[in-house]
Structure formats: C-alpha cells, structure tokens
Length: 122
Image (cartoon, rainbow, N blue to C red; front, top):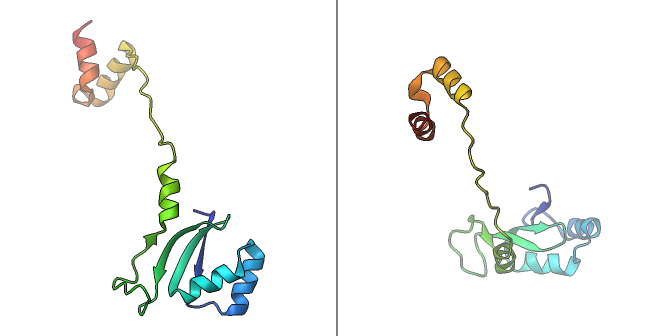
C-alpha cells in the first residue's frame, strides 16, 4: 500500500499541513477542513482521493468506537467498479511416469483423487 498516504491530524499543526499540501498537491483548505471535522487520521491516495478515516475521541459525529477505521463512501463506490481477478482453470494433463515417481517417493496415499482415477482408467 505504498501509494496510500496517512495523515495524522492529531499531531500536525497548520504549518505542517501547508508543507504537506505543497508536497503532495493537496488542497490546504481541504486538509484544514478535515482537521476541523474532528478526523484523527485520514488515508488518501496520491491523487488526493480520501480512502478511510478515524475520528478523535470527542468527535462531532458522536462515534463511540473512535479508533475503528471507516471507509469513505466515494472510495467504496470506486472499489465496487473494479473488475475482479478471475482464475481460469487449465485442463490437467496426467503423466503416468510422473505419477509413478510420486508413488515411489511418497507412497500411493500421496496421490490426489484425480490421479487415482486416471490410473484406474488406464
């Protein structure tokens, strides 16, 4: 997750927020606004998209479990649009010599059901 930046608003003052906004191109006013809204930490992508957050103990949202990380809805919507990775099953080709070598080294109990069926149907 090297492309995610975590900003801890509980330890950064306004000058540090200015430096941070200049370094990453974030809106200074936006960062100050996040700090005023009682966010403790906010995770951003390098493009400035807010990903997740925590709040301070005495927060304006009246959230009791303030240490819990919550996702921003915008980021959840973006995640829902990502195409899932798919595994395409390749056909398994059995080789008698390889199976016999496996039996010799590890015993016949090491065979898979598929390998046993293959040998039974020779």
